[in-house]
Image (cartoon, rainbow, N blue to C red):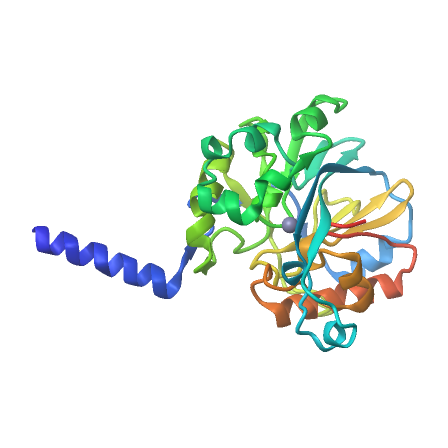
Length: 312
Ligand SMILES: [Zn+2]
């Protein structure tokens, strides 16, 4: 019996080491919002002003190695002689107000509770050290963002589930619906072993993660597009690569179209030179392909204002 248990433990460890594990064991369901759309439908509407009010909030200032943010081995970066350095970045929360559907956040900003007591929120010493939590300087915490809203928070759309995008969860109430890209929480990866405890703890007692209903884009420009409110005001765009379920959002605001790239592109340099992120990205070729698709979308609709993952 004891031998069996030991064998099972060793077997589980070997499986984990070979396959890695999912990012979180948090419950998962299909999205109650949105219907599959197409790039043709999105592009037909992009240039018309929409009903959404959008505010991008600098929740925290931070810094990260440039080698994580930009692929320094890409020919363009090599030619530009970019070297690794500490790069100043921001962590954003985007507040989206739909006139009928209410307030939604895109990503969650940073909770002061997390910075004050990382261990309590599941961040072990290794994660704290790797993330350089001590460099996080909160400008506006998630609690302050939520308190400042006109009405309640109706949901959070995550561009992906890396810790710097779920770091506001301690300030998000347990009733708020949460939305993610397909396979974001279930795809396995070796690195997930280090952050799974933190992801699980930050999502503990929260609503199940709801996956968007992405279908193949009939025009084949993107891996999938969802019309979030079924009125053409907000489109979720499947752009895997940085993570398996990375999602960009095209938002038709009262001031014109805005593209939130998420971490398909972290930096201004990366966007301007079409270079994908570095070590922080799981699948660089796929990330680059989807970065190019986003850039083509903007080239076809130059009035789109682009807001990047971590830099203005
Ligand atoms: Zn990020």
